Image (cartoon, rainbow, N blue to C red; front, side):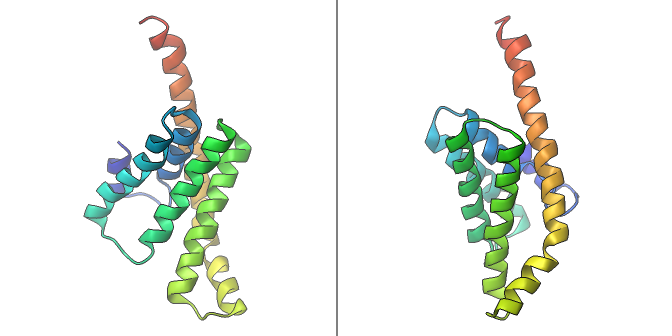
Length: 147
């Protein structure tokens, strides 16, 4: 489902990928799966969308977000915000390295121009994290109890 949501038209950065990385880190008992599953999702969708030089930074940011989930073991306002910030800082550092003058002004310009994407990431991360968290809690309470 996450691959499909990434492939259909959407606002830039409003996808479930970061939320999945955080959720996996917080709830998967297998640490390896928590780290690798978001990367597999990205690779599958990037096969159709294309790879670029920034791909390394996007994948590194997802490992960072999974690590936040692994460390805190929960999804909360704080962990969602930390995950969004981590994604924003790491990916835009890569954008700066690959496409802006290597000056403080270039760095400031890169992050300033990325703010609308950060807003979109926050929207997507909070919405999809909420859906994953409450969907999991609903399934656990209502479906798994009956099984």
